[in-house]
Amino acid sequence: MSRLTIAIMLAVATGFATPAAAQSCWDLWYARNLIYAENGYCFSTDLGQRTFADYDCWTKNPQLTRNEQARVNAIRAEEKRRGCKVN
Image (cartoon, rainbow, N blue to C red):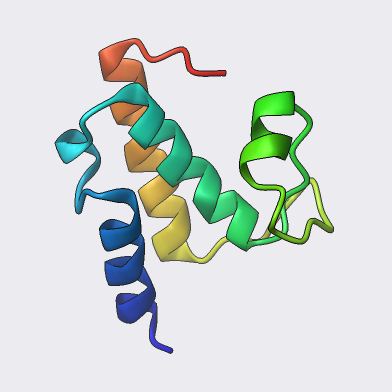
């Protein structure tokens, strides 16, 4: 599966194609952490553990692709712009 296909699937799964199009801080939080969950991140918060309990975890330092890291950075910037405090 290509990275473009994965990016499109992520946009569909999270309901927005760009961070600015997200309807809520929760949407942004979920989209950002979904990227980490799909890369084996072991969440330390109760919310993260409950939300992504179906994903295998094996690292606290996941290796993201450039595209994934760029998306995380864009989401974080939008969370900061909105003053989001989900977790």
